Amino acid sequence: MIFIVGCPRSGTNWVWGLMNAHPDTRAVVPEDMGVSTVTRETALFVSHLGERHSDVYIRQLIDGIQDVFLDKVLFEKTPTHALVLDRIWGLFPEAKVVWVKRSPLGTINAMMHSGDAAGTQSWTIERATLAYNEIMARWAEHR
Image (cartoon, rainbow, N blue to C red; front, side, top):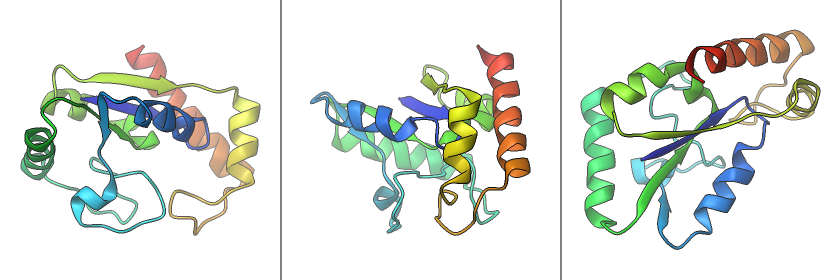
């Protein structure tokens, strides 16, 4: 299992597209959870609605997908999973993490010129800077 994480608007969609184009991989997408959304983010470990999936649910979901796609390497993209890497590695000790890092100016500028993952909320300079700093602090802990 591979997790693509980083700040929102840092290039995680681009990395997702590269990985999805490889014939030996399979993306875990919201539709696998029975959710129809405009984003590729599953938010398995964090939810924009304040809900949290149980570890049992997450493990069963991923194991079920892996049973169907035995010959594929599964990967998932939710940038803010960068904040819960300890939980991810607790459930998937062998997981690999691709941390996408982009310049602060480019990332914060892109955040301010787009909505959030749900496309519903604009980023302010304060909110974008706080989010960037929080996620980069986690990078310093885990790199």
